[in-house]
Length: 181
Image (tube, rainbow, N blue to C red; front, side, top):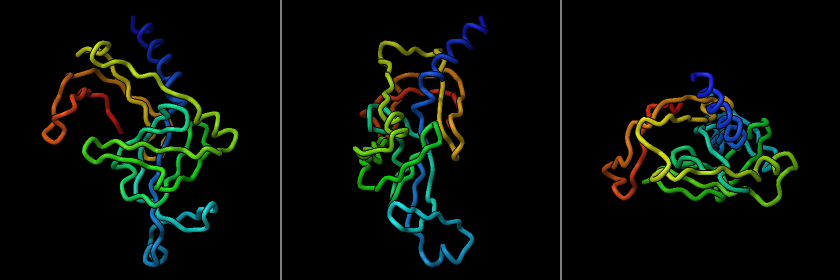
């Protein structure tokens, strides 16, 4: 039975992991950054130096659209999206729409993308209906790209459904114990 469960996990990871991206948040380097110990990167697309202000995961939810957390992209001046293949693309902050209350953000990719990136960005992920398909005690997988590490997978269970948080009392949440690095 454990082997059958592992096969099911493998299939989910095989389908979903290629759509998981790393999202790095950059701000333009200030003089103090250039003199200090912060490492800078040079973005040849716009001829500027940046320092990393944050990093997190995202997922391609439909062609050219990435879902991530608002706290990952908050106050970004430039984003660097790294796809599962390792290919990257720079994105201007004006391509982001975010909501601080739900901690969700959407990144719209440009229409013209390099061939390899275009293929990866044209995927989409299928969402379950959590009202119908998810029950307390079900297995849960978290697939992410934390700290710049590609496609990490953790597992846990659905601990509760319908959780309400004070500031999010309009949205019922799923609670899981799967580590989200």
